[in-house]
Image 1 (cartoon, protein in one colour):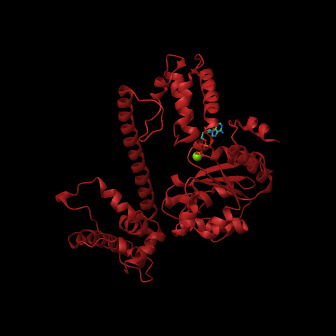
Image 2 (cartoon, protein in one colour):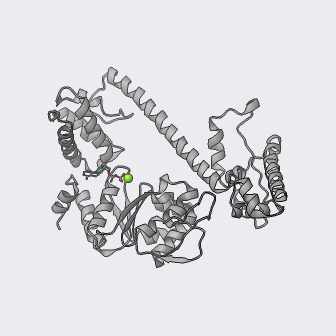
Image 3 (cartoon, protein in one colour):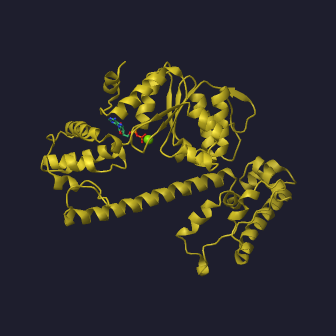
Length: 413
Ligand SMILES: Nc1ncnc2c1ncn2[C@@H]1O[C@H](COP(=O)(O)OP(=O)(O)O)[C@@H](O)[C@H]1O
Ligand SMILES: [Mg+2]
């Protein structure tokens, strides 16, 4: 299939040399079953390209599963990807198949792959090398035949240098690198894309088609498009729906384009629209920050649940949460935002590398220690009540037997 046909089949718009080159590489690598690492800014078309590769491969009748690695909490990602056995952690009431099992014979698209925790990276490397993996809580080796397409909008090699991403995994994934150019690198495609999107949206909303004046085209072309094709599509939709005058001029289009500081827009921005946008930008930012906080909170809660409700242990393992939690929170008595987590250090010293995160503030040590005291008190009471029978004690405490076992060891009860 030649480039033109591929574009038609997958609805790819654009004709810049960099885009054509990416399509070329994708179609060549598609039938080989090799891993592909797709890099490119957000909204540039990475997911579209992962589809092209899957659809043009021998696996096209198998399943295609897209996983956003950045959106799954660290505590549950292994179980989502590799499945788990019943009872392998608190809340695991049933065994569950992981994506790698479900996608057997097909393709998995790992979006934002740089966000994978190191432990998951190790499991992923094993799958890439041998097709073997273990469900969480099981020691029985499973086999799967899955092609991996990964994507990232950050510099993964930089993560390798910082010890956040395994070098061996990086090379294994990056057998064939595929870079999707940003819109800024293919300005000639911007107007083509806009025309296609605005025609589609005019159809969809049964509105008269739009015509852009030359100065409006100029503005579109010179804008930096940090959100790439996705952003362009959104703006085309907004204009299609909101613009009463179907003959769109430069000043009119400026109402829809976020204003850039140090912008290279050819026109002066009229003060009315500028103000509208500042306000809207602030609102967007507030919403964005709120969403980020929500995701963080969800992650934290998931981790706490997985650790049988042991908040202290989760916070000690993930000190970054502490700052986030106390960033906007006024502590009673107007304390500074330092918070100390003291965990009984296990004798194997597995927490040693976190020690530099601990803020030592004598006043608050008491408080967190008492939490742990309370916990060990409760465990002792539960064990006593059930005459040392761990199963029943764990039930009463609302944690899994495994967690209880771990706690008894940790707290040296
Ligand atoms: N060359 C293109 N032609 C037409 N639509 C595109 C093109 N590239 C991306 N898109 C569209 O832009 C949006 C974002 O693409 P996506 O693949 O999700 O980006 P990414 O995964 O890089 O964030 C999607 O709606 C996709 O269909
Ligand atoms: Mg994406």
